[in-house]
Image (cartoon, rainbow, N blue to C red; front, side, top):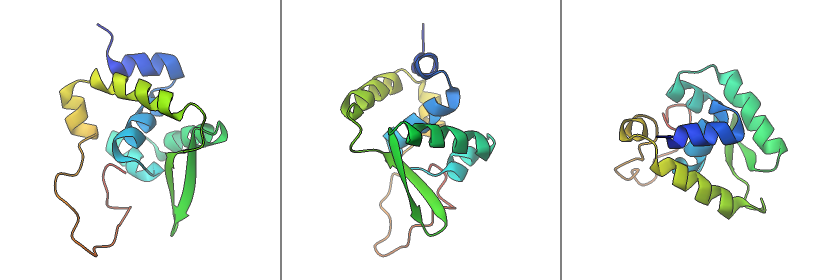
Length: 123
């Protein structure tokens, strides 16, 4: 059986891009160092692929303080189709992998608490 991970890696030709797309799909945004720490990979691998996706117009970035945060580009013409493909592939990921890397926050953030991107494990 082909897993969701194997399907996207074959389509995009890169396991890091797959991890980036799943992260943005689950969390809505992410930053290179957070992704690198989550997946225990060198940060430059994520930076290179994020730049590649941004140059293609698939994602966009903005600076928050000194941190460059990436999100899907709302103007990308195939965004809905891409998200549907990512969602379908995500269904095929093993539960263990989903719980390890893509677990959403289960409790709400305290009102007024500032967002600290350096300590957020999945972003």
